Image 1 (cartoon, rainbow, N blue to C red):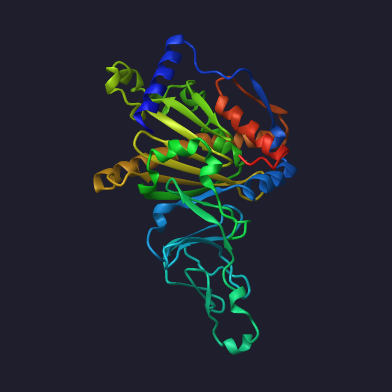
Image 2 (cartoon, rainbow, N blue to C red):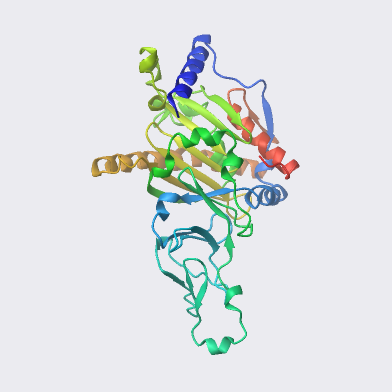
Amino acid sequence: MNLTTQRELIERISAQLDSGSDPMASSVTMQPSRHYVGADRMDRERTALFDSLPLVVGASDRLRRPGDFFTDDLTGYPLLVARGDDGVLRGFHNSCGHRGAAVEQKQAGCARRFTCPYHAWSYDTRGTLVSIPNDEGFNGVDRSKRGLVEFPVEERHGLVWARPTASADEAIDVAGFLGDLDAELATFEIDGYHHDRSDVLRDSFNWKQVVDGFLETYHLRFLHRDTIGPYITSNFALFDSYGPHGRMIALRDSFGTMRDLPADDRELLPHVAIIYQIFPNTVLVWQGDHFEVWSSHPDDGASTMAARASLLVPPNLTDPEHERRWDKNWQILMDTVLLEDFVVARSIHRNNVAGSRRDAVFGRQEAALQHFHSQLDARLTNPAITN
């Protein structure tokens, strides 16, 4: 984020603090509980969101060398994303052209060939079928049509974006999808960040509840009073929408000290947490000097989710001393999420399934949450919306 934008935001935040009131939406909204549990709603979300929009499926840093690959199934499709020997990144369905078995079993690695364990049909890093054992038994099979099925991928902002249901010739336009938010993300130069680690978390509640947990600070001093609550100002959340996406800024306890500095010495980024909500299911969190990336997916219906959490750090902060810091940060993050956020999310989901309440209330201080769900509703009502 450039200094001009940082200082403009410092002024906006300072004016809001001086007013004595927290940033507020214009009104309270109600969210039907059935939107978290209904099978019909879940089917519509899969079609209009997960099968139609660019999705973040991993970090570019994992795929820098020819032959680097990772596999992933969180989208509901078996993905194999690989850097070809020609340097081009491609996405394939991890499914053999013979009988459909996965051709790569590992989660990540570097390979010159992908060989199916069933009958050893082999593919190069461009997805071309290059070897069939005892191929005399397959006379008449056109090898050019039995290669790995490709889908479009794009690298942008240090992330790999994919559309697994699209054909390879349907290019993804991530910059167009992000709109005005694209330029701001570019200033962070995330494409040079190091992928430190990732974990996949699965649990028994709806995928949207993972996103919901990032889109308000109202709960911090209550649910997280003994963990992260003392370090982030509760209830203050400056929100701006960018089409279906959004940016929410929360204040660290050091913001007040920074605000007292001369104007030319003020810098926003070390003193805030910035939550970029990337529609439909990704949250990119600036944490002072590094990023967390969360992508949440429906797992097996509306009542289970699978979320990928990743840590991206600047390339100059990868030495052993910083690695110990990342270990500590990650442990705090996982303890907070698993022992606090996810416990409450399971409780909410059980009560939604039971029909205990017909709806939830999104307060005026939960503007980012209101925006996210209004955009979901708009997309489901009119799937033809392009951004």
